[in-house]
Image 1 (cartoon, rainbow, N blue to C red):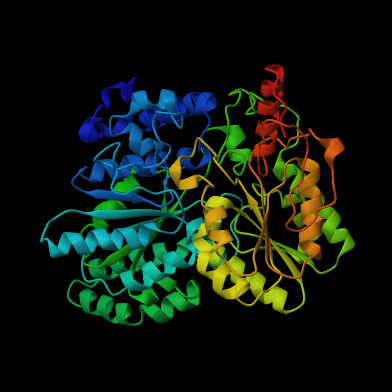
Image 2 (image 1 turned 120 degrees about the vertical axis):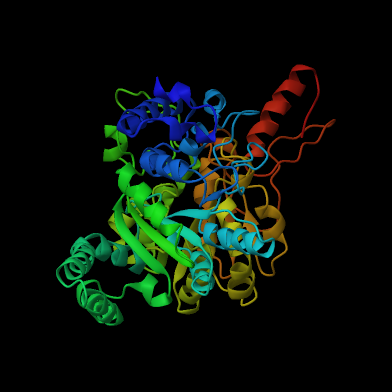
Length: 528
């Protein structure tokens, strides 16, 4: 196999160009086989195989730096930097991380896990490079979905003033986790469908220089002075160049030669340049192409069908939340559901289909989601913001300043609370209790089983102040149905009474406490 010949970063440069498509195929087969066993982010990685290969052929790692936004699409980068054996333990305890880790390889320039950070990180690396008078290339790889996040625009605004080389590769697959939303998505679509402008511009320059050797250059210069007007006629806005950032593309992200040519050109530009690359999420694996959202992050699956290897058929807490949201909206016309680019992951897809006018997907913009919810609450609606615990921490100030201080009735449905395992430290939902407990007017609740989650959501909607309901990613506990008591604010619930040992538990830990009680009971202890 060609893949076996790659043990270190520069080995891919030794592969003959005519063999690169075969290598790309081997990489896809390898990823599908390994991720089918361990689970992981498959679709996004299948889409950036050729892009990553082109980067590694044009750069010199680890001297040059690649910053992957979010980092979930770094599997090929890991393969090409000598970590092939690590895929047997991908996302396992003590194994290889599913995200870039500086402690794992000196080819990983920055630890990432959350969205929209890469442009700012890259700018920092560029500034450090220039202050130290060093000479290397910095490349940021960011998806179009991440451009729905405000931090990306803060970085772009700063990057526009740069007068030194910085390459931003915009990986446009028309998807984030689920389908993209918002103005930037529509804008990029207009560019993708306006390839005629790119062909017209380059073809006209070549024609004028050849047919008018003496005057052609002057004519081209004149045309460049009015190119802004020409672009406005063909591609509305041309946002990036209007900001002062050179735009190259769109480039076929599955054409290695075209990608290498664009990267080589970008390295010679003495300011910020964006290479707009069009890719297909899940490319090369039919189930992932048909269901890109499902294969964004997947558990172990059967390669032949793409179906999960383990399917208990039992409802998760997310499933329970999904069902109760439909009921709440049916009873109350003021209920509005908000998600940050994750209608599938948060269980709001059915809500979106039934109540589209009361469903809002803001994109990967958690801060905006929270402040937007504050505005809805001030306007007399009952917003329910469904966000993973790890991502909600990005909106700390918005929760504090725009919701809690004003005592606005916003309900936070916090999914993936607690330890989540495979995605590592950047995704653990272990900080929310600390920061939520510090906020004025905030009520925090955690259900012990599926019935209590339903009851707590109903209770939360009936309140008139900020409230958070946090629940894990696990299968919803179905025990203790006989202990379904009406929620009494600020009062704990005694489930069993004993005389020797007292166990205190909150939320999903009640299930664990019940198991401990049974074990102690077998040893003769009476447990409360």
